Each structure stands twice: as structure tokens, then as C-alpha cells.
Image (cartoon, rainbow, N blue to C red):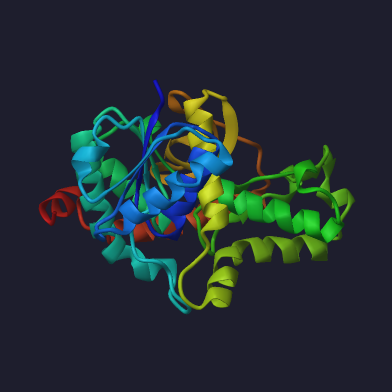
Length: 316
């Protein structure tokens, strides 16, 4: 039986994730949104591409959470998008209410699903999802690290004029201005980038990675990135559907790892059929530890002003 994948939010990110998912035939996709007609139209349009592209995944567009019942994986992209000049922090209260409402519905109709949260500010929204759903930590995660790492890897490849396939690396910390790219673990076919690039070049690429989302927002003027986020979501979905046991950077709930407790942070995880199967701890320099702690404090500041889970449930 095909996996049932629900994507909440039929905007650019959600629709693009649906596109990647069915193109890879990862399962049948339900696209749901509060806007009447939009998920239905996008699902039908994408389904009509199936004879051309040769995929047999089924697509459903809906405004009714009953159609999502029994989902294996739920991706939450719902929320307002960041606009030029708007920080991720500005999104906090509005998106907390949206995510809280969505998760309440998801938990009611698909109580055994795994959840990937994409809504911003990411680390706070995935925390909201865990609190509102009451689900265990291995079933609730956030997509950010795959995207941030992909940007870092792309920038490195462009700087060196090499294939992106040969560049590896990851990013730690919160998804935003305080993220922590770790250059010493970035390699080109096993060669550390420190042997290929100057410190000044690496520092510039690290900063561009931190500013990666804002760079695209500033180009688009309205809206934010969606192609790479959609692809990043689907890499995580594929790891679970196919039990690939990928080691990927993602927002996972920490209980002592990296000296942090009680919050979601971007870390390398082992991702398979059982969701977040392990948090991978790597050695960090004193400076990297300090940067990660600073990133964690920024996330804690957001969590501290969030409405409680009970308040979010009551607002639905």
C-alpha cells in the first residue's frame, strides 16, 4: 500500500513539495489548504502531468481534514510568509496560532503519523507542534537543516567550480540569523574546504548561508523561497518512506545532547522509518559551542513568549 502523505498549505512551498513527492512516487499526496479551490486546482493540475511524467501517485486537493485521515506523514507548511524587512521573530504569534490549529486537526485525524514542520520561525513552530500534539519527540521534527546545508553546499560548489554532488556539509543551530555552519565538516570528496578555500572565502560563504533565505526574499519582493525548501522536505519524507537511514541535519528535540535541553535545534539526525531514530553528536570547537549556545538562547527567547499549548488549543 502506498504511503499517505498530507501536505498542509497549498502555497508555493507545499505545492512544490507535492510536485517533488509524486515525481519520486513516494506515495499518495493530499494537499490541504483553507483557501477554497486552491488545493483542488493545484492537485488536479499536477495530476494531469502524471501521463507526461509517468508517475502513478494519487493526488487529492481538499479543504477538509477528514480527507487527511490515516496519513503516514504530515508536512506542515501553513503560515504567513516572511516579507522584506520582516524578521522570523515577527511571524511568531500569528504562525503559532496557525500551526496550533493545524496540529490539533492533524493529531485528531492521523494520531499515528510522523510530522515535519516547515512553518517559520521554524524552531519555535516545531516546538508548538510537539506541545499541541503531545506526540513523542521522534515523531515531530522540523525541516531547516537540509535546506540550509544545501545552500551552503551550493555556495561552496559555485566558489570552487565543482559539482554539487561532490560537496558535503551541514549546519547546526536555529533556522535563522544565528544558524551555525560548521566549515570543518564541509568537504569536497573528502577534502576539507579549509584546504581549498581561504578563511576569508569560507567566512563569506558562511554569512551568505545565514542570509540565504533573506537573499531570495529580497529578490522576489513578495513571498520567499520554495523550490529548495520543497526539495528539502521531500528528502526527509523519502528517508522515512524508504527507511533509508539517512544522516541529515534537522530540527530535533534535544534532551541533553550538545548540552541543551527542552528545545528544538538543528542537529544531525539518523532519519528512517521510525522518524528521528538518533541525534548524532559531533565534536565542536569552543567557538562553535559558544555559537550554538547563542543560537539556542535565541530559540529559548521565542519559546518563552509563545502562548501555552492549552491556549493554542483553546483558540481553535
